[in-house]
Image (cartoon, rainbow, N blue to C red; front, top):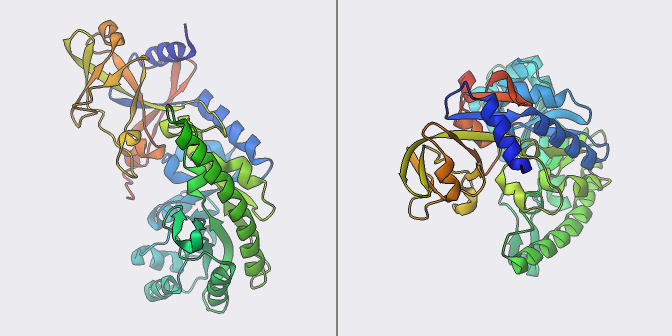
Length: 400
């Protein structure tokens, strides 16, 4: 029996009393992935990206482990909710225009001490001041650096369109604006190198593109390491007591951790290891989060139909954004239909061994987005469900 077949047998036994659709997290795999992330970070703390987990129980579990400290959140409303729930040191990774939440932040000493907001433009400070109302708490601020690799005098850009702050001078200018503005305190710098951490470099059947990606990423790592160090020096000249410099992502943990200028790493997707991480040479993890759909039809030889399953991930639309049939091995989509909103036909010889009511296990393309589809996660240890815990959605929290 292969390792994947053994996993399927375990998951089927563990959930035999549960009807699909359902989602599970294999805690043995989750913990092993956490240990691997911490090992690759080389002693630098990992700030957990909450959008890649979206379950408070699992956030608590990983933050209790050595090598993990703090949360990187994705909306201001989520940040306040987590702070009210007892989480501390929450860095909001994206600028916000939530005036109601800013008013709450500015009026509550506990929230203001726990949450840091992201800024890359002085006008964002204006919005926060305009939303304060009667609140006069000091707002903790982090500046985001644009990590994109620019070539040919800027005519070629590789990297996400995020912050407009690219050069040390640009970041230092905004740092000075924050430092001299009452009601704000600059505490950190963040730089997410998505073109390195979030792009697989080993694409099946595409050796030349894979080689080009590895070359690009090696060039981008060198350029960013030099520029990030210069940015940190420029900002520390303005704010000597800067608390942290955050960088990286699951796919670049060990490379980013090697930079002296970086004090902490961000990661989250590597805890679940969704299908997008199958194409990396920098690490390998164990798939920990899966969902099951029930077989409801057998249209013909080598075909079954499962209920639902059309759960595409965010990003540029394409086949790599679709969930992948994982267990039993050997199933594939009908190219004319793909995964559907209400039903999904699956092709392949394993279909002939599946009966009505059997489970087919899938992996989502991205990590936490799976939790937007399910109210609960069944936590599996060995071949038993040991707990069933709510996702954000299960707690009535859908922040985006």
